[in-house]
Image (cartoon, rainbow, N blue to C red; front, side, top):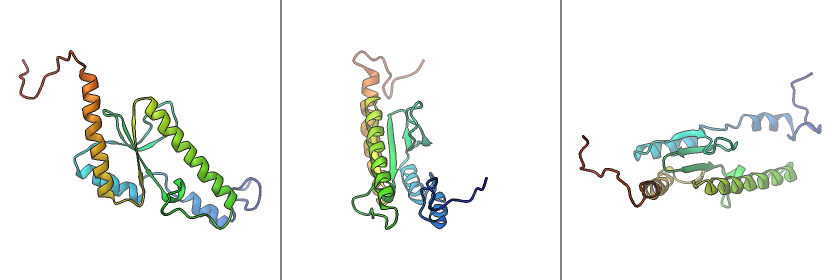
Length: 168
């Protein structure tokens, strides 16, 4: 059995062998926009997990995950997720790519819903956004979530120590 792509056959989604090679070389993680966002978030003093499933039983991976505050950050590619500013329709296989885009968008909405139902906050960032501006949004949501989650964990009859209290 040949491992060569079969352009034009019903087994291949690509319009040509060159297109297939190009699409297969797209990275799933550690892209330039992801690395820039991670550097900017890290420079703000925030620590996170990279490319993990916020909900372990659900096959959906967030780009940055802040488990303690239940914040999942997704960096969405303009082409793959249909950025209203930068997305362009493919000249070939237009029906395939239109369907693919709609499937991606539907999956994104489903992921957001599942995470919110599980008590997570979802933040989506476009790949074209300025990394520092996006990192500041991440920190803003992180700080808000830290206070919300901290307050809900503490509860009304908390015996948590406050700053300045001594440990014995």
